[in-house]
Image (cartoon, rainbow, N blue to C red; front, top):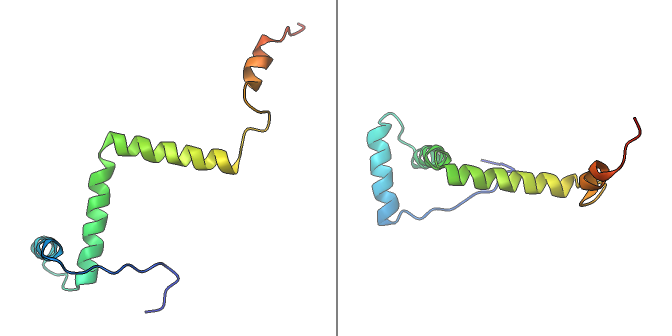
Length: 89
């Protein structure tokens, strides 16, 4: 089926075969190996997101990407310099 998304090839090694057998037991109405693998990937994603260390790393990456796209225009130390100014009342 045509798609613009990247495709990935997975060889059914013994480990993958065992994972598919477990997936078939979990989702008996699903017969397509591709769909079973997709469900396994999504379940694995949910499990990984339960880990606080992984969630923190994802937040760090998102902030880093945001900073690269939208850098602070005043440069480092700007807020400290503003705070040190003697403001007229």
